[in-house]
Image (cartoon, helix red, strand yellow):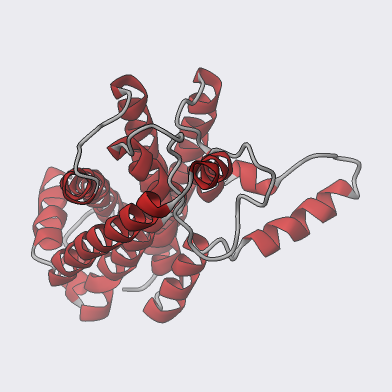
Length: 283
């Protein structure tokens, strides 16, 4: 098992798309921070208050809008912190978009190239290859999050002319929970890619998850469930994407527990599906 993990990690770091995606992510962070800083400086106190209320969910509105929006949740008069922009980009699924794109490319690279045929017959249980991919993607998720934090810190210093991290305790707790949620999100993308074995369809589905397109399907399920007498039930509250979107900066212990449960449940289910399909499929 350790040899398979080392092999997957070696293959991941030798994949050119890893560094291409990180470069594009870095450019995107710098550009969006520049735009955000310029807009923030032009806002009036009233506009900053409206944006703060919308970003933190105090202002009524659909929090799962189609597309991708990044709203700075900084109180009027306060400095924009790294935590604020981390929360804004995480909630907007900006980081998740890059993660799922790489997950699809990486998960199917050995299948499309035929490399898996060289090693598939040499292992006793092919499900170990799926677990090794999962470990590699977990490392990728951690590195991507901390790469983002590093670039965001530098960008804040350049464009906001000050580096403020925000409350450390809440910041680290939020980072830890979001890493696990994003890893579960990546596992969903990997599962789709391996089951469908089609990069185009898998990529489209993964991008749609980040753009909140599935809220249409969730709304349909909500209406069907309500017909059975279950009121105020929202499917999105029990999805990984929904938890990434809804998790507050000052999350409670209950919120943290619910998010971790959802992340663990989706990770286990997707790994089980992937392992079963990969074990039985003729490679």
